[in-house]
Length: 389
Ligand code: GLA
Image (cartoon, rainbow, N blue to C red; front, side, top):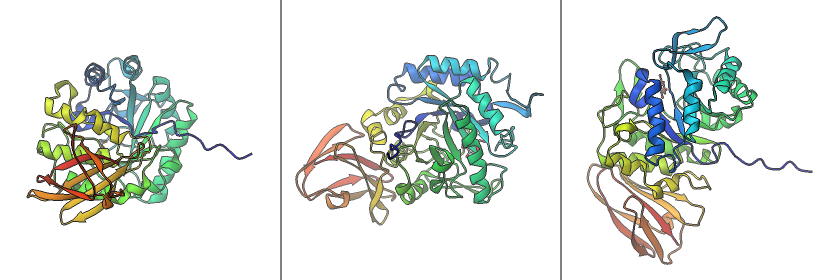
């Protein structure tokens, strides 16, 4: 008898939620996380699929471990402890995530989990943790070591018997899309940190660039063939709504640029981890994070990341087949002048027969067309469409 093909249960569609880093950095507290979970439930984000509430770096006591070698939550930031927080988050029907690093120190210099994999995984499981983001600062840069260190934690998480989503963060340098699933991960970062900025920002202290949304487009295009159910290319946490006020660098973007950012993450099947302070969310931010028709494209059960099917100068057409036979299309203008772009049936794999076009950001049917139609796309704007044959 042949083995049945296992069904993907964990991360069958791209994970959605919130992560503390972009807004709070090392100042994150229990109150922030608890109130964010309350807000996800109160504002209806939970019903839209935002499920994981993830505490990033800096949650533990900086200098490490108790006499038994266990990680210790910082009592000033998390006075009730992580287990109590998990209980609250679970009571709302949400899930809790935590962070560590595959070396002895995290990126911000807190205790990491290298050589404590099983002990830490068991501790997190006993607290009720549902998600681990596992970073790669202070670890050897070669690929075999990275594979080994991520595999160790993958085994340790599985060994707990608890279902814990495993999110790798080695920034793409060692081609995690080729081996992440083999070490038990469901998602892996494909770039360095995305800043609250359209263009890349040079960081002298890092000796590297912070990634701007314009450049994320190229990373997403290259890696599209490697994403799918249970194995997602992670374009990094969302910067929507930060408006230059987060602790992540960057001076903010225009509403149109944030819309392009959200459109790309949606089309690329990237996990959607909100990074702004939801307690103070404004209407424009809510419009980008809470559009059900847009989110449905990201969460479509086929889980096929969009391909870049046409490039003309700085204008791009991306297409993503959806389960009902329709095609999600992004017309993206990376240029600094407005353009009339062509939507062509042939580019998106459809015939010249009549098709219905729905503008997903406007949530309106716009027109029907046969061979092609022209659409105005403003500088840095993305028109997101659903085309139904
Ligand atoms: C790295 C990661 C970020 C964040 C910080 C925390 O830079 O890429 O997403 O987790 O570490 O220190």
